[in-house]
Amino acid sequence: MRLLLRVLAPLIALLLAVAGLALVVETVTAWVAPSSSPLVVPWPAWRTAIEGLTWQSGSVRAVAIVVGVVGLFLLITGLVSRRHDVYLADPVPEVTVTTSPRSLARAVGHEVRSHDDVVSASVVASSSKITVKAATLDPAEEVRAALRDRVTEMLVRLPLARRPRVAVSVTTTKGVK
Image 1 (spheres, rainbow, N blue to C red):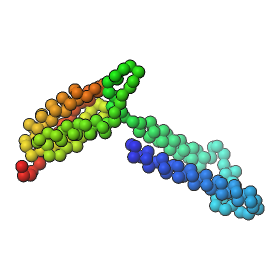
Image 2: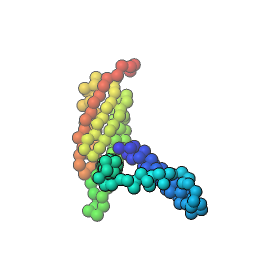
Image 3: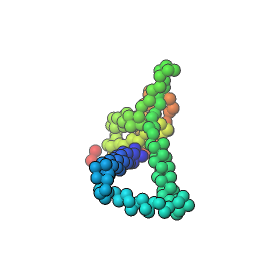
Image 4: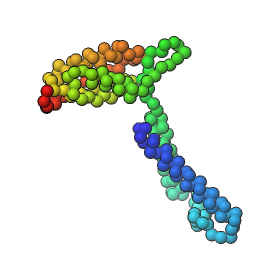
């Protein structure tokens, strides 16, 4: 979701900057040469078209609905894309300690990859669940149990406020040992 915000924010800013620039250019043109026609935006044509509209017009209602839907979409996108921090045990009541899911995934990933039988691994973490996908050359079930125990022991050592669920899946890859 953050990627969507990283794309939307510059696009909206660019749109507002272009609209602002057009407004400044049109204003300066109207001040310097009031009798000349508009430079960029056809204001007189738009004015005559708008003068015939009322609040009951279908086009006005359609524009209002589109603006409302876009605004609701932007509001929901902003609310959903908040940071999803992982809370750690507070050292004192006045201090709140958090870490990012990426940092937790990185720590678990180091622990998983340090296992001798793991060839490769990927870890995704959130405050409620940690998903580990690993590849091994050995029988997958033995390595899966060992990795689950190893991750669980590591989570006990971390001062997490809430212990996340752990899901471990291991696949056996073909290769030379």
